[in-house]
Image (cartoon, rainbow, N blue to C red; front, side, top):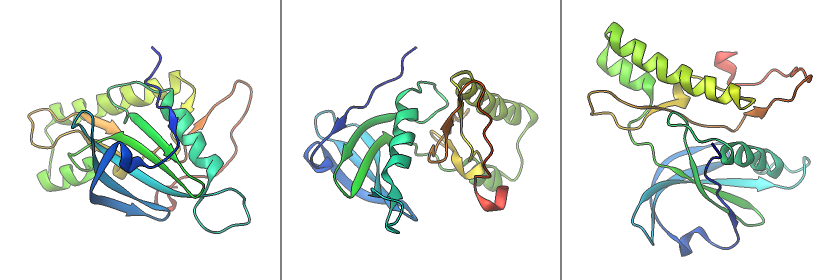
Length: 188
């Protein structure tokens, strides 16, 4: 099935979304909770500083963010975070993403201290179904780690897994061998 297609909008994200509290920050930007003005639905707005050329040290290369967007636009699976909307200016791109509020799977497991065999099988099954979908669509995540596996909601009997952060993801082509060391240094 063809995934939801977020069209690139010029202008300000604030015209269509009310920006709320900051949820997190990274090297090149911040993530804020936002509310779509027309529907009242909550999302996560990821603000990414971009640069046009390799020479600049500010922000991510625009092509890298565009690659992430292209990949997210093509994905539609219950265990993979969805891209809802997209805004761009000269110096920044804003990805409006599905809001995933249950926290990291890693923290959930650490808090519980142990999972039952049934819970572990359910979580692993969801992760593997997401990865199988990615690979069937010729996408390699390249940064799959505990921090990039989230729970949709935490306080439910059977939490739902979401794979997030496609910043290093690549579309794989037939006959092309990928020979690059990438990922989070602690996990390589």
